[in-house]
Image 1 (cartoon, rainbow, N blue to C red):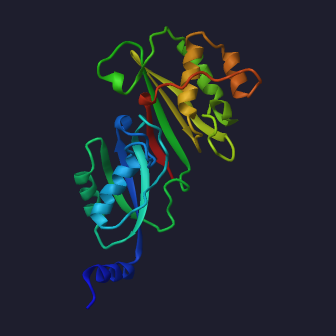
Image 2 (image 1 turned 90 degrees about the vertical axis):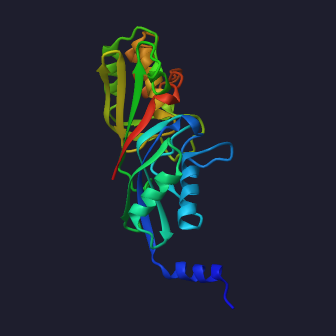
Length: 258
């Protein structure tokens, strides 16, 4: 007599392998980051756990960007492969029913089997928010900078980032990447009354790059560093170092381009 689990296993093997793409939004405040880790809850881990309940088997979810602890996303993209006949809309609905309120699946679709959320990405857009006066609500999603800032100097520093550069000075140590070269297509500060928003788009980003750039540009704005200092850091001149990293809470992965 064949038991039920074996029958189910045989039925699954008979199904074609499918590839699913998810468009995700999340508040990263309560997570150790996107990537699954042993030292706490991760966004990837939460979604994989929910998918395992829906599909009744372990699932490996790939993400377009490995956001750090406390970093948020409005346009994170993930994909997973599974042998299932469940409708795509049912997967999205099931995920939103099982996931905590700080993770939302905006869209689910079936894509070609070769699609890869990370390696298929052509570019990513990040934003970073700063408030110039104390705010009860914005304190969770923005960096309050109490210094008087020279916005013109910060804007000029942002323009220096455009193009192809080696961003090792703006990366966390021991990032484990083959190289630090990134091509930046957009780098600009947007002023909104008492709020600043930095937008940066590039073909790739190295670990900690945006937060380091923001922290260093704020030091330019407050007069702690000159534009020449910033340019020297970007040029990897000996003795010139980037500033401290801006807090994670102001950083958002806005969009991934394919």
